[in-house]
Length: 260
Figure 1 (cartoon, rainbow, N blue to C red):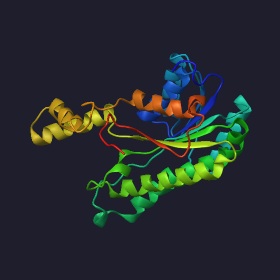
Figure 2: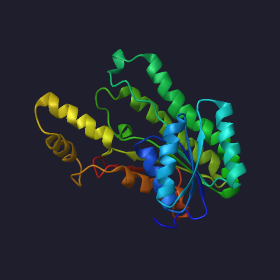
Figure 3: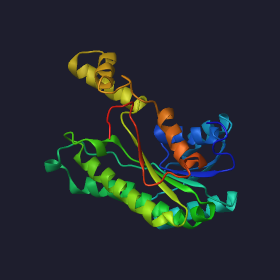
Figure 4: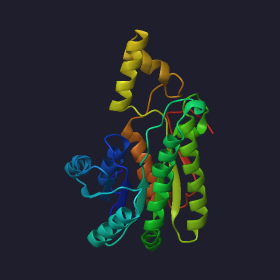
């Protein structure tokens, strides 16, 4: 991936310790100047240090993407520092309720839509003028929930399905401006959070975490689960000029768990 984003300025919204961290590090490793945005400054500082250590360049801007003024400040700070924006990655999401829809609190669904969908839309609206100048790209992080209807994922699927519909429409509306809009839909991500979850399942059923992993991975063609960096590299590709003719698409990164 080295050099794929040379000279590019990439803004990543929703930076956390998992996939958001990997996206920032991989974008930096590919040559981008990476602008990190999330509400928690200490978290941004930790990830920025890793980006710098990996040879990248990072700028942190504490941002609540549900707030118009905060997102405008993110844009202004980015342009003042670097003079351009080439890619916007919308990674923010709210934890789903994991309850059947019949028992899901409406406020939890509202919170998910407010952060993931309207937050992503606010970011895209705000950055559209700069992205038009650079003929840049938007990459929205979706989820494998759009491919299945398993119990207890209903509220999350509502949010992510709305994000997908929004991405399709934005691709059509912004295409004439030269802006590409695509999505990446990960499956399970083999990170610390999932490892903890598998440990809890193992305790509940008196089996080993390795058995939980094997049972889960057996549903995929590659018989394993993707790691954060593997998903992040797909994001980097869609943000790069190598994907210059790709828009309105969703790239599933799930080791073959689901097929279109």
